[in-house]
Image (cartoon, rainbow, N blue to C red):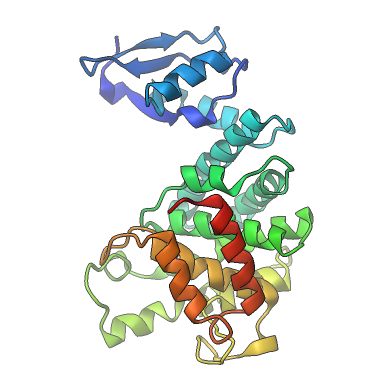
Length: 318
């Protein structure tokens, strides 16, 4: 029996039945002790996973020194090609965990070159999952984290942008590029003081002026790169622009705003409204969409708002 400090939780939803992870899996017992649930050499069967779900058990545990091996397993699951609904669900959850883990470490390192390199890999994995026939938006909504860390917000925006781009008819290659743009869209916020980003109250005028600089800061970091497309760069630079010209940083309007930026604008606001923030609790998805729909045609492209409504209507019960 191991101490809780030597273990880290993993989501049951990432586990693919009949696949050997090569890791010991642990479970909390009734006395809140961590005991061995399944040895490394024994694969989980579909009945095992169903029994865990029936008991309301959504997490198992692995040893901390197994983290890198688990991340490799997640990458293999996320990149899998099996169309079985159970495996599509596991791939969706694995994709979310991989993207969050990689993005957090990349943002923390502060190396723009490394960040661009890793997010391009993540774009391919995400596009494969979201574009697959068995993908369901509800599976993704169910596993997303909703804290106010910049990397969490960026990951969620990228996933939402992928779903919206796919619904709008973009192919897998374009969706992959849209994911990358979404992952990078708030890169400029990494240069802003955490005290401002995490302020529990209303920002004053000077603080809001600093916040409004992040699209320009992010764009300047990336603009001279040859491995990002115009659309991706515009997602960074224009995701706070509005159709009516009342956005920032420039105040362009209508057709001057890149279509991918318009995708990013819709899902960026939706994600911000429905996630935890230092100054408020998450808003129900239906209420968040009401606010977005109110600005359809002024702030947001009407067609994109309609498509996003269709996605969240089928993918969420809240």
